[in-house]
Length: 129
Image (cartoon, rainbow, N blue to C red; front, side):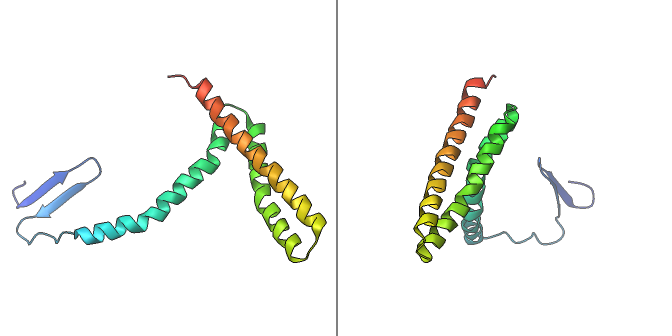
């Protein structure tokens, strides 16, 4: 507390100055905090999904296996067009498009999963303290 009636509170993140001659600020109710936490759940889920989907690229980059990272990214990128091709082939009743899109989807998913497992095995066996 300084000579002018201000209380200084320092934390690791900020410095708070309260003027004790004025009324104290209102506190936030627990209901508002609960609602804020509820609204932040989708953002947390998206961050977790992003980390799970993009972690192999970062791990391959760490271990200088960029070719594997490019392969993972390419196979992951083929999944959505293959799904669209299956949808379109089913809609226009084109069996060749449907079968080829189904085959591409199967190969893309299996390849991406294999690269994902390879990335985490590389991280597991090469990690040093």
